Image (cartoon, rainbow, N blue to C red; front, top):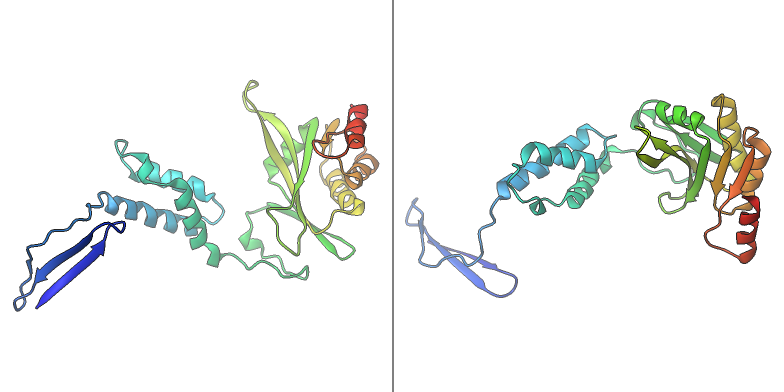
Length: 259
């Protein structure tokens, strides 16, 4: 019996490798492979399997961080790093643990599965009429938020899906050694609305649950509902400034006059 093994290398060459089998004995034929040897495939597979396994064992750890740790542990220093695509491995690792996560709610009548959320990260589920707003922050983020004098607030729509509307976040500049300064997020609110009463509910909860706020200045995009909520309910703010990067000339002039 003869077994033919064929393959195409980028559409340019056809390999017809022949293996002869007289009885129970296999012998190579005369043709040679034209495809190059894929060196290091065993190490690549080992790294990939380790990334996928660790991603499912550590559901709250960043997939990119897991990939970096695995590559650092398993790949020798002299191996070229371009053989291991961290972005690709991180995407695949996240896909592997998708089935372990709760399904995204289809409406606002949902049940919160706290075991799928890092411990003490979900602080409250605020109900405003028929809308829900979920506030997230760690204990360390709350401590930094309390001491920060300048807040930078922002909202994005790209990272949330229905039935939620936007991700509202509060940021501040933080220094670890007195020299290196970096702006970091300190509180997140997954909101299903953006009316003034929705923002007021967020700020009211912060006032009631984060004592001794030191904030003196808040910078935001120009949004009338957010302005009203902040100025009315955040009593510890002595000066509110809105910075409008896009919009009308009137918006820019109003921002400048508030500085």
